[in-house]
Length: 132
Image (tube, rainbow, N blue to C red; front, side, top):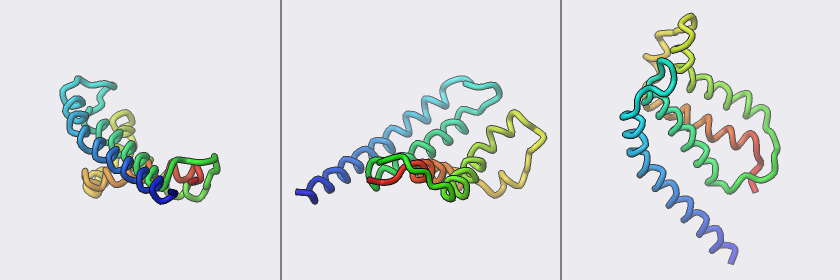
């Protein structure tokens, strides 16, 4: 009986992942059609950040729902914070021109940008909660 419960959770998770991927195109279309939300902010950049972060959080649910709160400090400070800083760097640059590094945009393209969003969302949940 326990195996069927586990299989049903994974099937439900897979259906949710498929829905998240399926509705991502409509989310990006909606963000592209809107005017700017924030001062000088590109909507597609914001959509990429939100989608990658949300997909990372959803990916962390593959191991099960978060259990009790238990902070893993090395994971939080060693992986989550650097990934988050790399992820939000383009948003920070639009407001603070003093810290603009041109090499960042040569190194980090859209594919790598999604990876950093995925890693930051995944490690946020993994560093704050213990799995059940």
